[in-house]
Image (cartoon, rainbow, N blue to C red):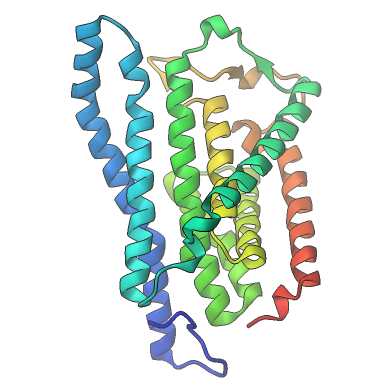
Length: 299
């Protein structure tokens, strides 16, 4: 399959089917590979790191089990995408060019930190978030949450941008690419867990943001940095396993804020009206910039 999926004009049914099948493969294969690796390494780690902790009579080896598994899964997921593109499109993926990895990831992560910090700042100043004392926080689960959140963000960004926005933009145009990115993000996240309506909309807007990142920069790294950074921060705040042995391990208490329920939402910061407002503004700004740069005139 060539890099340019549509040469203009009306496409045949066979070409539609070919693009659809390829998009499904490229969307799911890296994620499946990553989840398989993180599961396998976690199972092996249950024996290896527990044994190390027993021998040294210390807790530290258990802290690195999930980060090690996530790092291995990240490498495999990215490698799967590269291999799939090489075999399926007969090219090396320029969208994952190593030279742009560090600046692209750094840019996206910085934006994620600023955006998440602004959101949490609004919720804290409004009294919607009550922090727990560090002494009663289970920091192992917080670290696990950060690692798993980072992996989830990376896999989502890779699927939405590489398997959704990129292929749809090349085949059907930028408007369809951004719209498909929004729908794909909401479907992938809601497939894992049932989302309240407000959070579903926020996830869809997040997918549109990733699609617009791809449209503007033509690289996956900035969007991957954004989704990975956001996932890591969200994971450490909510914690990897919110309920363990009947105890809430998050570092804040979701039910203690004084704001009315529709403003707070029941799913934490990602199910809040302030995030909805921020996402709408971000989509509008990115779409305006892409239009000014002539990205929507490309087919």
